[in-house]
Figure 1 (cartoon, rainbow, N blue to C red):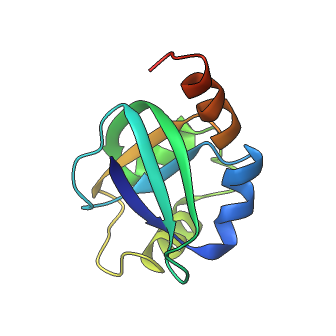
Figure 2 (figure 1 turned 45 degrees about the vertical axis):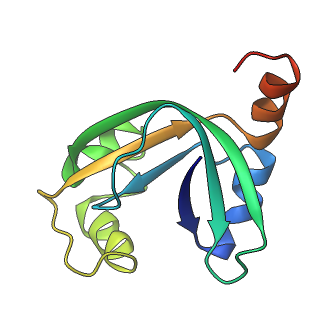
Length: 114
C-alpha cells in the first residue's frame, strides 16, 4: 500500500468526496491503485482512496489544469504550496494525483473490482 500524509484540515473534504486530488512535490512515486492518506497530527486516522490518474507538470500549470486559475493565481498558488514545501518554485515539477472518494474506493473493493 502506498501512503501520503495529509494535513488535518483537508481530511473532511477527502472523506466526503469533495477533494479528489492532491498536488505533491518530491514525495516519491505514486501509481494508480490504493493509497492511504495519514493524518499528519494523528497517524491513527487514515483514509483509503483509489488513485485513478497521476499527472506531472510545472506548478505554474497546475491551477489551470485543475480549473482553478481564478482562485489560485500564481502568487496565491506559490504561497499556499510553500506552506508545505518552502523551496518550491513556479517552475518546479509537481505531481497531481487524482483519486476516488473513500466511499467509492470501498465500493470498488466490495465489488471485487481491484
